[in-house]
Picture (cartoon, rainbow, N blue to C red):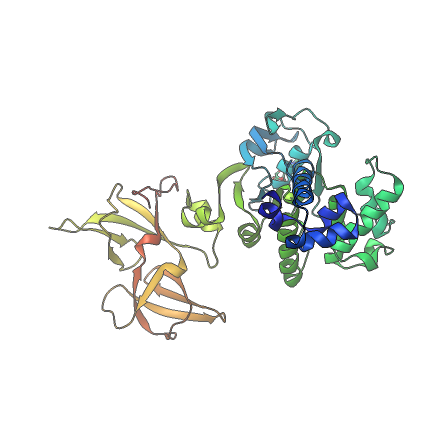
Amino acid sequence: MPFYATQEKKDEQNVQKYFGGTYLHYSLSNGSEIRDKRIAWLVSILYDLDCLLHHSYMPRIRTQAISKTFPDGTQALHSVNLEIHDGELLALVGPSGCGKTTLLRILAGLDKANDGKIFFDEREISGLSPDQRDLGMVFQNYALFPHLSVFKNILLGLEKSNLPKIDKQEQVQKVAHSLGLSDLLMRKPSEISGGQRQRVALARLLARNPSIHLLDEPLSNLDANLRLQMRKELAELHQKHQKTTLFVTHDQVEAMTLGQRICLLNHGSVEQMGTPQELYDSPKNLFVAEFFGMPSINLIHGSIELKSNEEQSIFNSSDANLSLPLPPEIQPVRQKVILGIRPESICLIEHSTENLFLIHRTEYLGDSQVCYLGADELGITCKKTSFDFNPADKVGVDFNWDHVHLFDPANGQRIQFNDS
Ligand code: ADP
Ligand code: MG
């Protein structure tokens, strides 16, 4: 039965849009009471058609070897290949100056690449003007007009639309209402808070509701609490509208929590793309490993050696008296390695006689505790939900080998051992 099969995904607003009347609205929000199955079936078909026409068309974005050098010789992007799936929220993250804004401006058509192509689905759009790309951008500084009211700032989003004036005004009211701005419409940007300004910039984008959303560090000017709240609101907005979205941030937590996938950029090149879990659990190189995680991953220089007279291989730290047997699935393929282990994957052992570390300091974080330890030249960080150790205690150290990463010190690349 088509109506019942698709009922969950309907929201009342969409159904009202087609049928306007109270009666059908009532009937649909009480689906089981519809007596005439033919009406239910028709409603279902029209609703799905609405989804197809108004919601489902979100292009896939693909860049092919985009490079950019500014006239002063600054090379901002080196052959960037990136794909944002249809309706996906991709977080583009990287340190300040790595080329995020440059890439966004090239996608928006505000800047030109020196090399490379951009495709929306299969169509190359590299030569199109910003107006022809059906995308909207929220800039880091919000780019609001200070002399215009909130209402007029949002209305600007519809400047190029052919809608009648009354419909445009209605659209502004609707979007302002959904973002909690209804009471602020007559104020100027200087008369509202940072978070509210950020919402006005978003409202301007949503009023037009283009099929691609490009957001350049929209939360970076907000204080911590507001950031958290806006992060949640952005995630909900994306869930509701499912627009193909590129969200730029330099904040690893924002990227991990908002991005369905993440693209990590460094010095204008893509280091790795994948789901937050892929980047956290299987970093391709030292840069990726160090970028994600708080506190940072422990990186221990050392070597893999074969224990004398035995088949067993061991890891020896070059900075401390730390010698740990490797599990059999990790075969030595190189002598020198950098061993990466996240703070939560270190085990502390009471009354141990080997691999001893001195506890320097502990931090209580409410839901967990962080412990800083040292032995000789090596300092490591461990994180647990709780432990009973105190500064100056001596404890043994072991690793959860399922979560150990080994890197080649020569080039920083991950060394693959089976599935590790
Ligand atoms: P991000 O947004 O990641 O902080 P940007 O894309 O703004 O980085 O900048 C990337 C690099 O390009 C930086 O080194 C920056 O100084 C440089 N850059 C950006 N815009 C220009 C410009 N118009 N002229 C010269 N260099 C620029
Ligand atoms: Mg930037």
